Image (cartoon, rainbow, N blue to C red):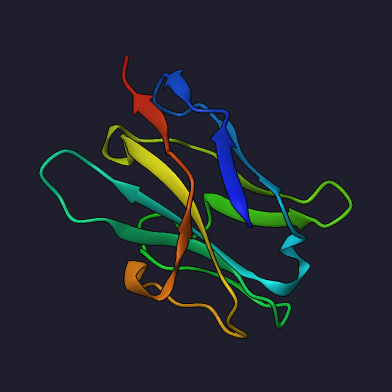
Length: 124
């Protein structure tokens, strides 16, 4: 059974960078589309970035385009989210999620396996 564990969150100053990791166990991620989502206090969970089983990747909010990059290392069974030029509004709990689907989706309900989340706080 697929399990996901996120790591790499923390406190960073505005303009800084973090790399989040999503390590999988139980089965290979090769046959899954992986999404990164975030949820800030009082807000709905939103899709941030996605790497599809078909080989494509995308970022969803305009606010992260050009700053966030998703990548996958199948040998390590891990997906990464590189976050640069971080802003206070990026503060949230970040989750990775997996779905046995061919294409990406920004909808949390399209993903059935979730990690526990990792806190990212951007503050001076």
